[in-house]
Length: 359
Ligand code: PLP
Image (cartoon, rainbow, N blue to C red; front, side, top):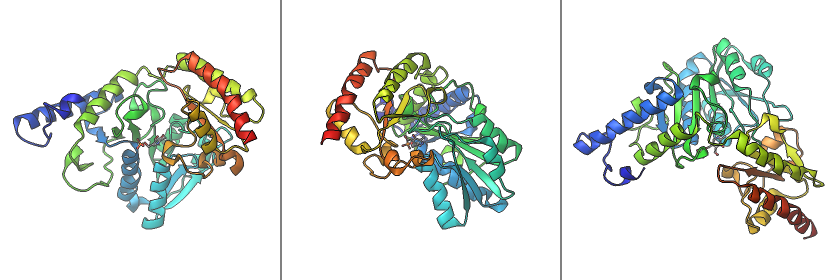
């Protein structure tokens, strides 16, 4: 990334020699992403991260397809980047929505999706894996339903990349796939959107003709460089190696033997690095603050909603009461997490709970 903040600071749209060198790198970066994804380079759009990819995928596609219908389907457990994009279209642009329910583990039933598709359905958006529970969706099956019924399918695959085996972008049976770099050790503020040709969503940013007219604005070359390298290094062979991480999250799951602690989503159906539990009666913010004082960095709902005292919409969709949905604690392990660290959590967690219950 550093050369693009120093010697190669040029703008890839400039025609001088440094600009041309940077343009060559940008073109090459797109080819490298296409090589990993096994798609055409023209189907890759660099973005500032998943929120932008998702907004472009949903708003841009809905707007371009509205002559064919105004019905959009999504699920109750999506990230707010999806839910609020859909909500915006419904509240301001005359679209209708169906929000699909999920089972107790947070999975969408492909039959429910099939039954929800109407003649005027133009877009379905369902995430590949959930950020709060780690639940993995039967995404290829859901995509196949859309394919068969000729409805455009978007998946927010942010949490999935770098964690589950990736062969090619077509394995999701999706027309649009959103990802960001910082979920697999790339830089924050980097991302991409796969857009299957010939789909051409309406732009959501207006200005120059960058990214083949799909995303105006001077490219963040350092972010592109970091994103591409992380994608090449950490996705085809997932950096969050299930063989290494599953024993750690399994061990963490043993916290559920403590009285009043419940595991969310059994291991077989979830990402190997995520272990979520609820402790009804104790709110997440208090629990996370106490863990933090003991040197343990954990999360609750999505980091974007951190600090909010609202119950997690994801857990509410699993049928939990607001008391329980408000008590989520999520541990995420990574390539640097050690067995010793897990043992420290196991040792400190019961005392932390006791302390909170006493106070
Ligand atoms: N979708 C999911 C499932 C996420 O977990 C996140 C962020 O953590 C996003 C979308 C938004 O990504 P970003 O903050 O990089 O825009």
